[in-house]
Image (cartoon, rainbow, N blue to C red; front, side):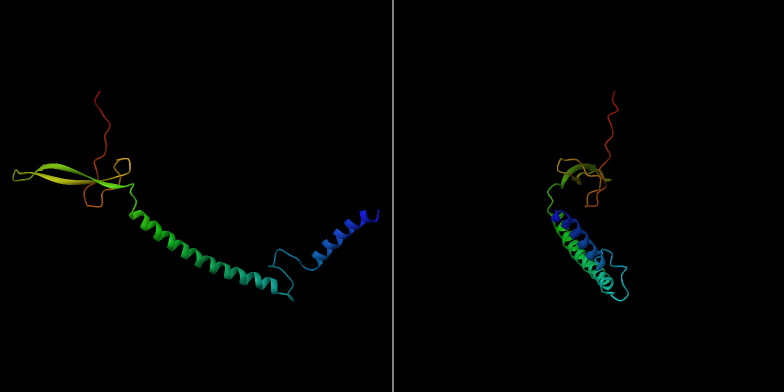
Length: 129
């Protein structure tokens, strides 16, 4: 019977001791005679912000560089060259190259090719009935 009362009383004593010694989760408000926790939290926050931003900068630079290099070797886009037959002002017939940037399925990309050619003509629906 004595052990039955010992556990609740012991738990209450441990709880009272922890509460009375100042175990707190909020270090922003504390005793002015013991400013250590508040100062520690402020300094820790400052150091954490600076270190986190420095680490984020480093990770961002490395990931951006890796993505840029990977895009150079991306085989999903390639150029397709068509040859147009055009007639010059003096009547000659010549072949003119026309480059189109296509994706891995052969569909033209909406952006114009980086060769300075005009963008591909828009596809028009079939109006024949």
